[in-house]
Amino acid sequence: MPILDAANPLSFFKGMNGVFLDVITRERDKKAFLDALLPRAYETFEGSVDACSNGPGSLACRGGCASCCTIRVAATAPEILYIAQHLRNLAEEESSGQWMRDLLGRLLEANNATHGVGEQDRMEQGTVCPFIEDGLCVIYDRRPLACRGHASFSEQACIDALNGEEIAVPVSSLHLTVRSLIQNALQSALRDTRLEWGVYELNQALEIALRNPQIDAEWLAGADVFADAAITDVSAEEMAETFDAIKAMAA
Ligand code: SF4
Image (cartoon, rainbow, N blue to C red):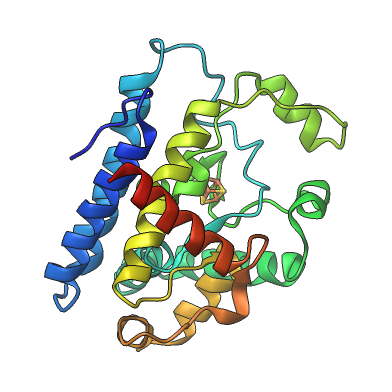
């Protein structure tokens, strides 16, 4: 698996694009496709951040602090389907009945509150992610790249920002960079294999996914199943041109 060399990010992008292309081509017809695809992205993220950071301890992020979990989460279709699959599996466990009903209730509430709200307004609104319980993310192992890429050096700055202060939170540019490189390499591979490759608002897309038991098959057949939840801050044409230019440069 490629690991980011900070001096050569384009080579890392190309390597990850190749890994994702290979997995999609070989595994897309198999039941465990998402289990083959997403752990590669997440393990590479963690490995690259570890390899390029100046040792542990400088980040303020810790279990129990969920100050940043009011952000709008922009996730790719396979990341959303991977979480939906996990929630469906949990829903089948008899013991999870009430817990799951509560979680789904919070998801619907959050979606109603944040539907159509832009990124900045969302922060100011302060609606907490429905996956937070007692300060912890209950889908931590499957949280999207967007969540992994948001890492702060100051808990107090996060709390102040959450309380509405106009303050620049000192975030890790390394985490942001690794997130972008891996997410874009994944999007590029999805595009190359004619799968929908946009990013979508997590709550709304998950609600769509959980209402449609055929959604994995429809997405694999090429449908834009999360179109209503699409985030289009950057045009698809612009992104596609950038992906192609980077791949050509890194060749
Ligand atoms: S998915 Fe988890 S990490 Fe991401 S915003 Fe929600 S609670 Fe936070």
